[in-house]
Amino acid sequence: MNRALQWKLIGGFILVFIAGGITGAFFGGLHARHLFFEFHHPRLIGVRMKERLTRELNLTPEQVAQISPIIDKTAARLKQVRRDTGQRVHEIMTEAHREMATSLTDEQRLKLQQIEDRHRHRARGLRESTPEPSLTP
Image 1 (tube, rainbow, N blue to C red):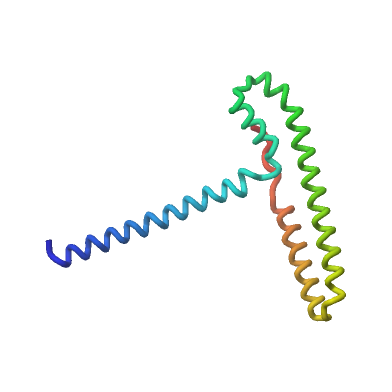
Image 2 (cartoon, rainbow, N blue to C red):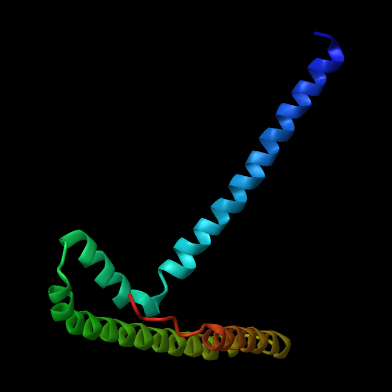
């Protein structure tokens, strides 16, 4: 085997290795997005609870029908806890910013206000851009 052929083979192996790495990163990113952003969506908690219990307990359709109201009630209560917690966090942060503002210069207060506005805009955008997912199992 001559030197040119050896270098071509080494180069080919390196290219295949890089292509595999890029492909793995792409599909890994898609999978991570599904796991962290779509699968754990708070609005789907009831559906996920029903699916998991049905699968792990081998529930019959009659049993699923019997426990569905309980799961729906639990999901609604958890949603309310999440909403209340979010409001409490907002109140605490607002209070902290008010207290901090007394120690800041006018320029720093303006920047703090811009940070608050940016955060409020992002939070509003997330609420408005997130469609209500289908709750059918």
